[in-house]
Image (tube, rainbow, N blue to C red; front, top):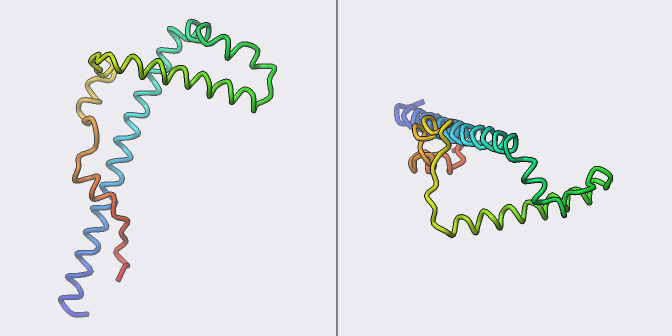
Length: 130
């Protein structure tokens, strides 16, 4: 194998390694956000779940006796109400901040993965490609 072929192979391998690292970085970023959201929603439900269920009672009452399909539809309708309420709240222009419990880590990782990592991860690349 000539020096040019070795250089090209080395370049392809480095490009692949960058692509893989960018993917790991993005997945880790998403995992931190997902864990934060789940934890804060769990805290919210512990504190306000009874009140939220009472608000959605017309959709949720008696679900334990219903078939899974009907339960799913009721939960979908309830999620629609929550989405609508959140949309209305967002339209007021209130400032949105990270929760106090997760503010430090979410601030440290940033709002979104950096643009360069997103670009590096977009190309699905393998070093074996000719």
